[in-house]
Image (cartoon, rainbow, N blue to C red; front, side):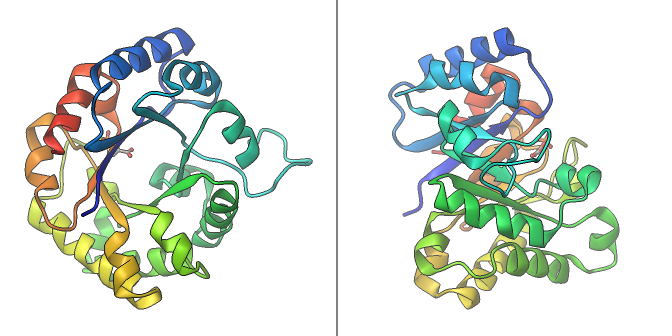
Length: 251
Ligand code: PEP
């Protein structure tokens, strides 16, 4: 039985004070929840402060990105060890906004996934098609390629540790959600691809989150699908009540 995982991607929002306030509210409300994993991913500048707030609690800390090198002359970048240093246990990799605005590729994501695993961070690896690709019936090809290339070369232990997030780009921040059936179809495809890359047992262990305008109103139905193991939440994660309602919908 896969434990559902709800992660909040706060993107480029919230100064340290607001981030700490939100994290404190979440920590208090999920203090006894062991039936669902809860992760918050603030901006780099708020990581340490939020990390201090949630340390030892049921709320886990994640980052929205990292660099693939250990250290060195990479101005403006943050390494896996630096993330660990703030208390991070998770890192979102290959988010569509990183791919779209910062030129991230599957090959780069693959390097980061391997480095994250070595540093004992759990990568949340994002994949998903654009509206244009969906309308051209390319969803299966696009998602298969992203999964195959982003997760190339992992061993079985690594496969069992990763989280995949299916995030149709057309549903992110648009208020337009994939229907439960549309999402389930792609989640099942991803599990099939994982099964071929590793083995069916490991593929069954991988948590696959849905992301794209998940809200309290649609979360339950989406997460009732057999291959949807949680959510990666953007807009609705910025407010404690709506994020907590999604956490409740997971179980
Ligand atoms: C995201 O960016 O990961 C996301 C799912 O955003 P939203 O929930 O706002 O669509």
